[in-house]
Length: 200
Length: 200
Image 1 (cartoon, each protein chain N blue to C red):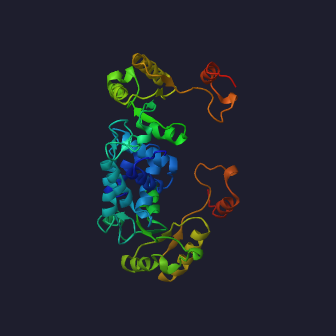
Image 2 (cartoon, each protein chain N blue to C red; image 1 turned 90 degrees about the horizontal axis):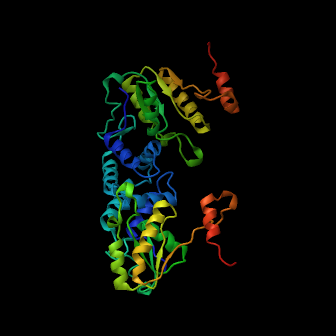
Image 3 (tube, chains in turn cyan, purple; image 1 turned 120 degrees about the horizontal axis):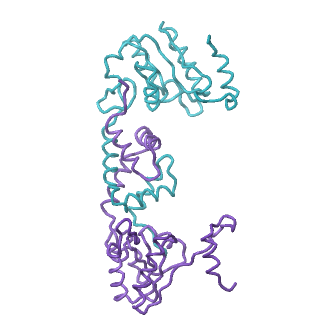
């Protein structure tokens, strides 16, 4: 009978295979490295996973990652009372933060409208957003959702919901991406880039 | 000040980046998935890592992965007294095993001769191999080392050490790989394929 790896090894490979971008071969390669390389210290990764899983919770206000119930962003007093940037997912926050172009607060919806997946307005964090707007009185609401069909639908829905509040509501621009030549742009991107033209 | 992820998150990303084939971007992507996908269960991977690290030890005879001190292969009585296939690393054993072409025992050297890296014969598991040959009396020693300079040097060294024992010593064939066309073969592979020709 052909031999196989011991059960704890195969169990580790199965768990590694679940990670995004890790196929059967790389899962086995990673497990072999972890268990046979002298500097691998697999227990360090194991501990880091346990600690992250146990300590990281969504920020009670914006939904970003936090260890204290209120995230680093919502804890900065200099950001209070300014713009609130609405995003689909908590994972959308740091890319905007790293762009350096925004210094206000965020609000993650926890998804976007997707009727086919049974995601309606009541599944999103829209009510907490309205509550925040009432108490925090931000100067502007910036809708920074995906530039696809579901993102557009969610943006349109939110625009309607937020209009009665009397606060400026904007949406991020769509157009040619940085470094993107015209010859690579699709039809819709070009339509939006032209439609969004402004004085040079 | 631009915000960043909480410390336990960044620690997890650093540990993930150490894995082979995982760059900075995929480490962050994997960490985000682990901590924000509802079916991710990061603690399961953490536990699998701890259990594998704690329970897997090298087989006392061949060096393969084992949980009991003696691996699944060395524990099969049907394999005893047959060929011993000598490989560089424990990770080389299962590929041979899965080929279905070998049903004997293995012996991992734990490396190969590499004078520039200060790996000499005394750093390899050569003495335990000689001890095994004396006690187990195998019918043949098959040298299945890498087909590169250091693998060849190690094979030649072992051939000299094993010759006085009076047991047949063979080395695996070098030649055209399966599915490999002649137009893709390098010069050395073709030289070896020609040199190793046999009646059709």
